[in-house]
Length: 107
Image (cartoon, rainbow, N blue to C red):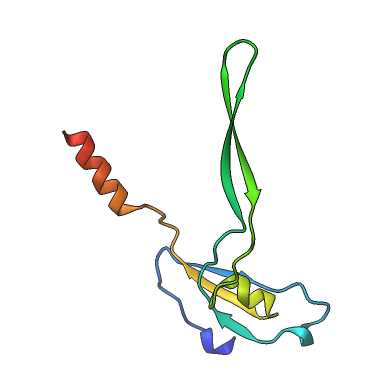
């Protein structure tokens, strides 16, 4: 880790997402990998429940799906007993959708 000293000093809005595999002892670790954020193993589903009083209730549920261990993903690195470091920016704004919505509202 000495190679990272001083970096990313000065970076704005940066999060280093570090995942360490659950191994019995550090000798089982196979190194460190700079990774990309992997896809979740769950998808969000919406289920409607009709109430006896006529109200509609919507329940959001997490449904598990088969895992995808994509190359260079944090999930793949941890599965291979490697420490994963993924640089992230916390701004999740979808600027393409935002621009389209602004255009729709401007009409």
